[in-house]
Length: 176
Image (cartoon, rainbow, N blue to C red; front, side, top):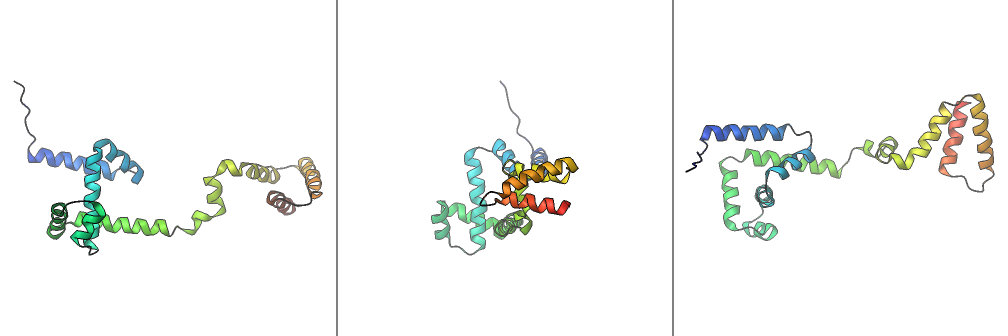
């Protein structure tokens, strides 16, 4: 007969600590999500996520009935989370506070996220012709510059100048 011994409290605490360290060592929320997806079943993820949302809704003053309607959970689950918040719940509170801060940051992105450099980094394949031309002009020798200028003079004959053409002209005048 094969018997499986149960882990004692000390061993469980070590395992829990290892899980906490593993979570803390994740570089970003994407990595943490991957780890949780690997560790937990779908129903476990749903259960944990609902507990966190219940805590958030309790803390902002929602009634049990409102929470039950929003999350489709029973009163018993809401009461257990509420009781845990009353007994301690610092982990819940800290997580909810950080989620709110993160949500605010995402709603109010930093201005550099819309800078020309950031856009070019985000969509490099779209902007590579312009980047290539800029680099060519900046590093062109006298013979190459003459050739570029002849191409520009042909482009000047066009009725409407593109944004790229205008940028090339600006770059060329800066180099003179």
